[in-house]
Image (cartoon, rainbow, N blue to C red; front, top):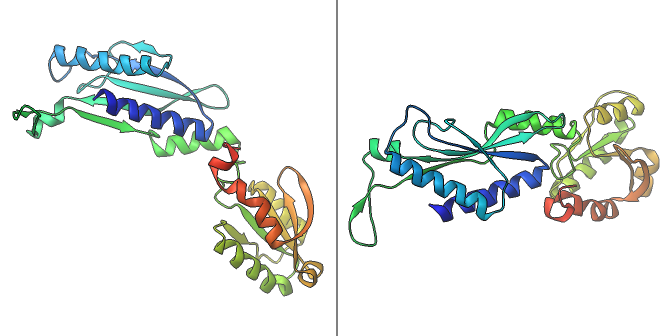
Length: 247
């Protein structure tokens, strides 16, 4: 059980670092009403505490806050305003293995009752997404953005070229959309800025003739015109968390 919990804690730490969250840890102990024996509770609580110490993770004891079936490690996400939200948990469960009459044959050849370990890496998905949106103010890093590139044709006659560019980006694994609205280019740029899309590619007569795209970034502004392969070469590192260290 100890090795399993250490692996889960490592996974949680990786996920929290990936998404850029700070967090605090509580060790929630036996409530007044509980399932199982005190001996099992004390043993499991000791293991949870030892795993946290093994990884040098600071934590606080939250007396009596465990669930009725076992002690747990609670991780509270800190959002951009310093508020804490329930996030990942690691829980030890004595109740369900007994209720389902589960058993396994141990190394000594005897049947034994397993202990179940619950894990929630993100916690409530809706709560996690809400905190994540606030954490970045909607301006996700490129690797995390739902739409990474939007193509802005200046007029309808440039739509075919925009679609051609979009097809090449899709083939390269980029999440891309084409803004087909009958709007002026300034309105399209403002719309993309409000949606916090990392990159905008403006295409008009000049870009069609030269076989280029005019690049805008949501925070760095106008980056000039480039052939699409050059833009893709520059974009590639931002498409993977591992290459951008979460940036």
